[in-house]
Every structure is written in structure tokens, then in C-alpha cells.
Image (cartoon, rainbow, N blue to C red):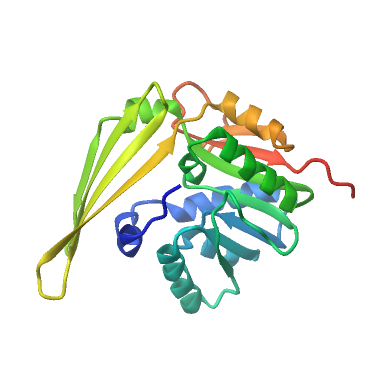
Length: 252
């Protein structure tokens, strides 16, 4: 599971078209439906803290965990600006540890797709089940096979901004279900010249059926799934799916 390094510095700049406010409202609504209005919540794979900050603004006591030190540095800068009391942890989600249990855990922005081995994803879900309060809620999203095959696969995305540019090449292998992102960054230096940086990332395409199996093997209880940002059931053209699972096994 690769960590964002050079891309971290310009991540928010290039992701400024992501409707984080709407995403946070949707996630907040899912938690509210389950009666989770406050308390400890973990953002697993929090990145630069875009969602973490918004959930803290809703009144949750937030913890953010990510395996990229560079991304967390930016998240902590945001924390200074907002004044929110957020605990950030530099941890790989496959091995994350908390001091106790939390009311809810969420992992969004297709973070779980970066876990390319089912056995590793099962371990992530086992840890989630371990660190949830009895009956606690786990919410995560993932990119679908359809999105990788029909939308992203073999596509090149390029953006040119005032000071920075990037070229993002996708290569989806249907046999392995792995989408390879080759990212080339062109970052403007103080002397006006551009420095090229390259990163390679991998994401795994999962089906909802596979997710259900992994959830159950990890000891969690599958609750439901939605076509992202709706209350509709997923279909064959869903690009992103939200899954809700519940802690199972602890005695109240």
C-alpha cells in the first residue's frame, strides 16, 4: 500500500473539484440514521484531513489515521487553522491501533481500494471490528469494477494549473483487477523552473459480493449498501458504492 509523497503537497489543489461538503453531509446523515450524533469517530485513511475536519465541525471527536506522513502534515496544518481537537496517527490501516473503542469508523475516498490483497483487507476489517464499540458502525466506500473498466481504465487525465501540472495515466488489468496509476507531477520551483516527480499507485477492483464475504469473514455484520450519495441500491453501473457494516461479537 503506497503512501502519497510528492503528490501530498499539491493534493488539495488538484482535488479542489471534489464536493467534500456534500460527501460529509452524506456521511453525517448515515451516522445520524444510526443514532450516532457525537462521540469518538475514526477516519481511516484520512489523507489531508478534508473529511476529518468537516466531521469534527459536526461535533464528533475525531481521530484520523493515514500512512502518509506528508499528507498528515497538511492535515495538522488545517487543524491549527480550524482549532479542532483532532488526534492524527501515522499508521497503516492494515496495522492500525487505537487506545480504546470508538462509536464509528469510516473509510472513504476509495481508500480501501488501495488494499490490493483480500487477506490484507480482511485484516483491516478485523481491526475495525476490534476497535468499534459494541454495535458500532463501519462505513466505507469503494470504486467498482465498472468504474475501472469503463471510466478510468486506459484513460489519461491531465491538468495544468498556474504553478503545477500533472499527468495521471490509468492502466486497468481485468484479469488481476488491478488499476495502475502512473502519476507525473510538474512542480514549479522558486526559480521558475519545473521539477518533475513521479509516483505509481495501485488500486484493486472489488465487487460488492466480494466485500460482503470479506466483511463476514472478518467478523463484522453486513447491514446494507448504497449507490454512492443516494439511498438507492447499487446496480451494474454504479461507480462508487457505500457499504455499512456493524460490529459483531462484543458483549454489552
